[in-house]
Length: 128
DNA sequence: AAGAACGTTATT
DNA sequence: AATAACGTTCTT
Ligand SMILES: [Zn+2]
Ligand SMILES: [Zn+2]
Image (cartoon, rainbow, N blue to C red):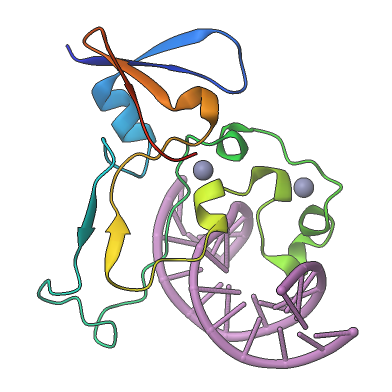
């Protein structure tokens, strides 16, 4: 059974998660991979159905479980149609990559999550 | 440019 | 059908 270890930014404790479990909880793959899909068949933006990105489920805001209740999005939920500002996924805050290279891998979402230990080999990924 | 409103897609 | 919330447009 393949496992990976990471430090939760919300708790100071170390968690072991099954590789498949973290994949199922996340909307990204592992490890970080960039590829250019602009020449894939059916990748023409005009004919493609509008794709809605999903939150990553791994960043600090995604890990929160409670609405703050005081931000403008919470207060004006009916008109805002937006998730609580404290719960907004870090990945979705960045504007969607439009064409060319796009990330299809698990990103290190916080500095203390950027070190991943797999098979006793510590791997540190580049970006925060 | 930033925030609000809106239209719409995705989930249950 | 009801709810959640992304992406676009409008407003400031
Ligand atoms: Zn809030
Ligand atoms: Zn996230």
